[in-house]
Every structure is written in C-alpha cells, then in structure tokens.
Amino acid sequence: NVKQACKNAESSWLMRKMGENLSHHLRSVVVKNKDVVFKQDTDRALDYNMIKQCNTIREFDTAYTIKIFNYSNVYHYYEDATLSNKLHLINVPCLCLSAADDPFLYFRDIPVNEADKHENLAILVTSGGGHVGYLDTFWPFTNNNFMLKLIQQYFDAIMVDKNYEKFVNL
Image (cartoon, rainbow, N blue to C red; front, side, top):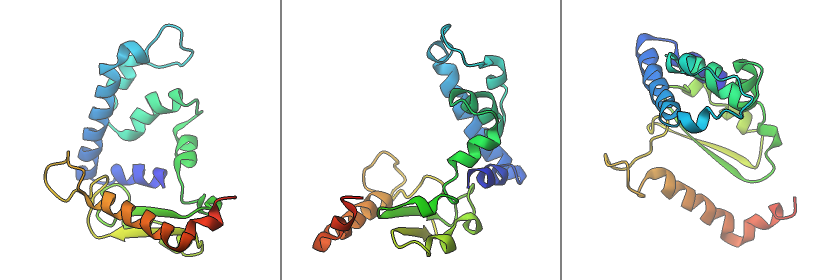
C-alpha cells in the first residue's frame, strides 16, 4: 500500500528524517541527470526548482514522478502503484517478501490475510530485513544475501515434479 507507506514515512520525527534522506537521494538523481530529464522537446511540466526543494517522498512524487508518468495527482499514482488491492489478479505463482521491521510499510499494512485467499500467492514476512535489506553481511555489494537464496529455493520448488506446468498456458 504505497499511500500508507508514504503516510508512515511522515508519521514521526525519525520517519520524516528518513524520508528527507530518501528524498535527498531522489533529488540528487534528477539534479545529476538534469540535462537528460529537462530536454527542450518534452511536454512534461517539470519545475527544476520545485524538485530541488522537495523534502518528502510525497513532495518528490508530486513534483516529478506523477509528471513523468502522466498522473493527474499523487494519490492516483499511489493507487495504481499499490498492489494490495490487486492480489486477486495474480494467476501465476508469486512469492512476496516483506520484513516486519520495514520502516515504511508496517507489518499491519502487509495484506497477509488477503493473500491467504489466493493459492498462487505467498507472502513471507521475516522479522528483519528492513525496507530493501536482507543483507547477510555489512558489505552491501555481495551476491550472498537472504533474498537471493530465498528466490533460488522458491524457483527450485516450482520446478519439482513439474509444478510449473499448470501455469504455462494461462
């Protein structure tokens, strides 16, 4: 639920600081690539100064993301980006990985009860892992992390006894 995650990111002083840090990194990507982002032939109404002043993820999404993807407002974008209300559309095996300690999407916001209603969907919630973590070591540039191991095990399980065959001709 992207709308809820954004709301959570603005819910306390610490979360606002984390959101400001993320917003800073998002802005820096735009600033670093401004020659590409602000081409003269674009019809997008991007305002460079407004983007540079964004302090929250919601402000960045309002100033940049919705304009790049042609959304009328940030809430329409968040609704489309949210998957929790689209779980019933998943027709192939899908493993979702989430962490209970995710600072943006709290455990209560993970649709585990809804996922239980769908045989092709599994949501694995680990106690740790953060927002995009699952590192086995402090060094982030290794290919040895929990998420990669889990993905390998998941695909191995799908291949056992040709379990994948019922999904080939959907």
